[in-house]
Length: 309
Image (tube, rainbow, N blue to C red; front, side, top):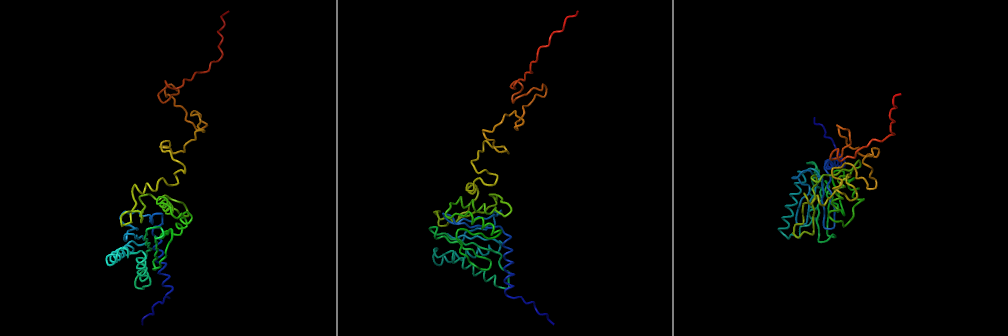
């Protein structure tokens, strides 16, 4: 006699699949997309130099993802093939970010609702830039095929809520590339417990730059260019101008000019003069000859002894 199978309601099954996908995506590191004056900036914490989260799809279209690498890499390759075939069959101007986002949405939605395989543990960004800021488009696609048209900035993966809240308080529309990059990197290092500085070598940065003269507007930022755009950063850096010559090799803060104490004042934290180990006399940097001679105090003269009687 066969046992009846366990019945699961469609609502419970969809909920379980959604929870499964969200947990897998949350284990990845966040990816940030920020619209700035000349295009769209992508920033992610990615120590790998070979496995990219941000890639080019077509002339003015870029792709970013978080989650399982093998799954979003399959989606990226499919998007490149679709864009190439449409541009070859019709015209390069017919390849749009909206059409690509719709194709991704159909694929993800079909996989999520199918009971034969697990849902994809991925979230995607599809961005396209226009000739002006008003023509820029940024789409966010979730694991279940939902599409959202984002404005200004968007975050996915990792602690997305915390990073998005940080950006919401500090984002300024129309900022230049350096300001947008510093804001995005600071947001990646922000957390509820304590902020941290993400090393330059652990950052993956790319842009869609409308000011480029080439038809392909995608460009990666790395090396000296990335370091120059970020500049000095971190909690250990002061807010004011930094004099590297005066502070080199010193762990303490610089002493103000009006608060310099006598170097022989031990109570004020000064350094006592060195002594010659043989004579006990104070010695300067060049030896006993350069030191200040200490003259003992002269007391009252001792009267001569009385003559014998």
